[in-house]
Length: 108
Image (cartoon, rainbow, N blue to C red; front, side, top):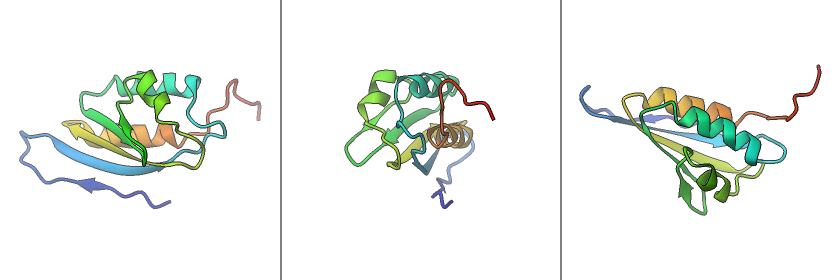
């Protein structure tokens, strides 16, 4: 998988910005249940976060904004985070956006 990673070079006392590309993997896209997981995780970071699509952008700390992006399966999005924990934030958001959520989980 080729995820674009861009880290700005700024002095340590300034916020860095990280961008990564994610592809939505969940068969039903990002609907209410996956969005609740993403919102909860997004709120645990201090960085400013933005999910950017070809039709708009939104803050993943808001379920309404996340759902309004129409994140269907196979849609490519850019995750941008700015702040002291931008790299960890961006990595976690990409991980969640690319998760194949299945509610309830299937038995293996």
